[in-house]
Length: 174
Image (cartoon, rainbow, N blue to C red; front, side):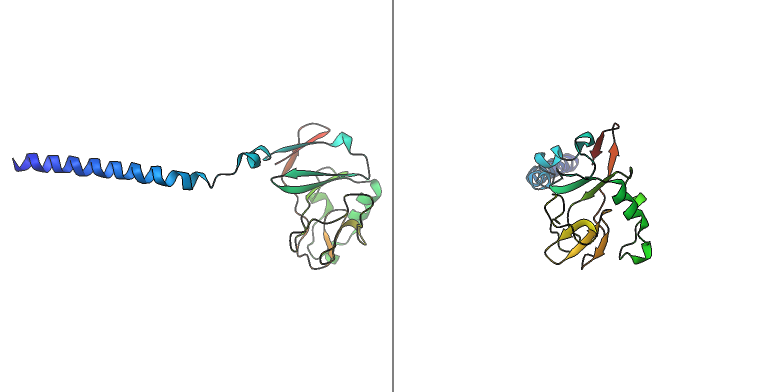
């Protein structure tokens, strides 16, 4: 009879533990699930840009994951000027060819690396700074036509997001 009580007790303990684990999981799931990205962010996980609509010398701004993305169709003069810069003169040395898969199109995250402001220079009437790229008016950071920091307190270049060309005229960011 002792064996029967032990087996019944073991069954009740196992059942109680199983219900307890299921209860904790049901209680914890909403807290875990709320850490997933929101649906609007998942929808922006990848953004396509039709480059044929951007003429040489023009820029476009896209929103990707809640961040502005600067797409600039660079002129031959801008590319040449970016390639002539000595890497030793840069606070964050990076070759222009490593920043653009195709030299004529530069794609960077448009957030100043100093304090997270959005630099000016996307529109023709905005100041672009001494290096004809982007200018952050908050603290005076200046970027060149390759998105590299040239002057001011920003510690690093404008980041280049992950992107790939899906056709000759369409680039997918993300």
